[in-house]
Image (cartoon, rainbow, N blue to C red; front, side, top):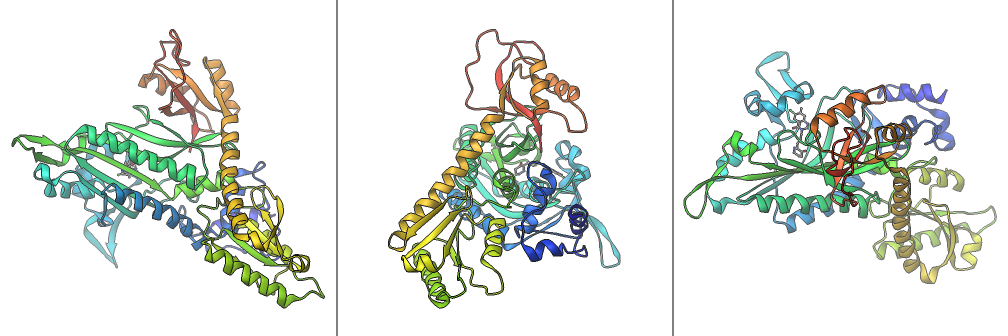
Length: 509
Ligand code: 86X
């Protein structure tokens, strides 16, 4: 069975090839509705984003995935530079002393830290850790570099990999033991400046999800239980995967307050010569973004890439019938690509002669290219091309005279449609509940639950305990900044105490 072969494939480089699938290009063997987990694995592998590796939880990111990462990186990097944030690079390795420095919040994470204990055959005198995040790596130097108010703000970012040796089910992009991210670490003289930046960065994260990846997200604040324990408060953008009924944290922007400044002695002298402690933020988004995109937009034919992030926005495929003017068709394909490329559209022609047009169609559909252009004898005769949308299959004949405007228009429409459809599906999953009974029912229906809450930590712990099971417990996802009206006298869904706010709840990744 395909499922068995797939599983062998996943175990690493030595696994059996799925020969039949590869040669016929018939697409995926699992559907998104029937077996979401297997569908996802197959979509990222057959779509050529991921290759499984022989270490569990580690994946090869192929050019098709990295090109998406690079487009988001180009946008985000330019935006933070406008904010006067500078890039830097700190080492991958952490000495045990430095890692322990900040014991309190490390404690819970300790099992996830990977260590290097040997070089060649000899044990290292002192083992060194691999960064799971870089607070403890960077902040000793913030302490050194920040002396007076003129050294503030200090705003640094790095693009790097981090390693967290997780044991719960690894999933490409979503939960991998090594991943790529940017981590921003900033220090200010005042809390107000820090507060402002937290929201500016969160807006950039919203933009990456909504404008680039066409994924609707909710901006909000994490509960005390779900926030980064080392910080003051955590904001996030939260996405939702309708098929699994799980929320997923898209990116986080933390205000760390002065907690780390205390631990690492990051002090400064103000204009009046008074001693002060800095206010810090940290924020990150990772290659998880790509996984959310696949889960939200992908379909039974494979990946569906939003035009804004697709390495290839358009593929031109010649459709030469037996006695047609094959050379004329090929020339038209090359000319079409040239015209589109000149206009800034990422286009290529698939002129391979060892594959049929039908095979190419399904292959490029599997890879998620937003728009396909077919050119056959009839198109050549009419000086037109046929455009086929990946998102909805709609076919349009376009005169070559209006090629560029029409294609640009279609790519914009596809981008917008992907967002609209994703938002419709997400919104259809939202269930407003008032009572525990409604909550449990909605949870069983894989809903994204919006409930009035008393905002007490013990009540959230209780919700977790009462919903524990093999599907995983429910937790709070975020308290949205956009709050619906909360009528006087509204009770908490879980405790019956007076509700303080509306909060999203659900199972999550
Ligand atoms: C929390 C907090 C924070 C900078 C961000 O979310 C944005 C970018 N860092 C990260 N976190 C840990 O602190 C952590 C620590 C250790 Cl030792 C670990 F093994 C795993 C961790 N995971 C998350």
